[in-house]
Length: 431
Image 1 (cartoon, rainbow, N blue to C red):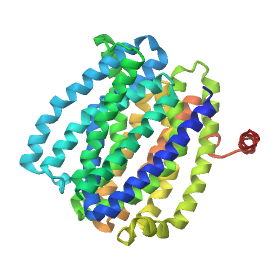
Image 2 (image 1 turned 60 degrees about the vertical axis):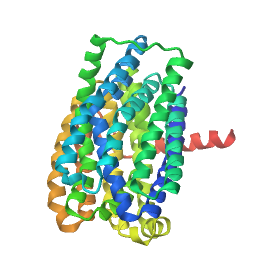
Image 3 (image 1 turned 60 degrees about the horizontal axis):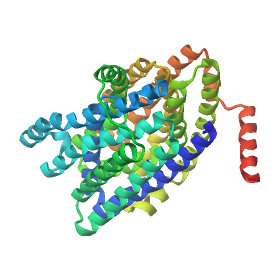
């Protein structure tokens, strides 16, 4: 399948996922209010960190190693099953520690809710690993189909559970049940329908963990860059502020649909590519086109943000618009590193992403603790924007040094790019 078609399918899938995400956020906001949504946001934030840490980077390893050699497919699947199962053992002590000490950054999440979140973690890791197996095989149609099925199923379960009980627990249980169902479907798809036979290969597992842990270290630090603020907001401010801030984050990150779609495809292609110059020339072009599009969308979103939020989520979330305005510059600029970091990972330079993540992580922590107690969620948004800018600048530095590209080639759109866009639109219209 060609790059343009692959990106188009992935982008349309991400666009649909965006609408599902907005519907989900709207349902939670309207039904649970800022306080209830804040509990769900804190629980989901912890879920995000736990899955990232215990996933051991195998999702990225799947793409990298299958891009190099598809003959290891059975062993890759088996190794992922083993690591996901071991996650249950690691999470048991954390449950009892939190039940005893009631960690402040998880304030508002009950012990039963935390238990449901912890059970969800290994299933999400398995689901993410198997989806990335499809990505490593460059089966973009099935990859996107499962992502869409997953989000639709979770939304349906969320509405059904909320109709029975209006509580944050309903949202948490909907995620758990939806993840289990999708995981079972993936086993059926890969093992029963496609006939793969999971097997263990400890030598390959060590290699996968070696690559994955390097990639994951950068991902963990980067996740801290744009999710740590949720815990700090919960620590210093009322939990309702977490819910209000979550709306701003959800709207801002929807702009990554374009760059995220491209980054998803760049990773496996870069892993399998043998022509370095052709690959980075192509990456430069799609990055500057993506950046121009997202910058344009950012301006539009900034202009309509306040009436949009009040109309869609309710007057109680009006404060989200101010935080969104502080977030948008960072979200826009980060779209560049979203693509470039995946290129670096695809060519095996994951340590460069780690360096960028560490530098921007320090910026995040310092600014979050300095700004959130003083100016609330606007401080969290400003800290995130400055962190995103820091990450992008360092990633751009490593990328241009490796590829010998100029920064102008990556960021500034050219007349030839506009010509290509016009021709692509004409071809689609003619069809």
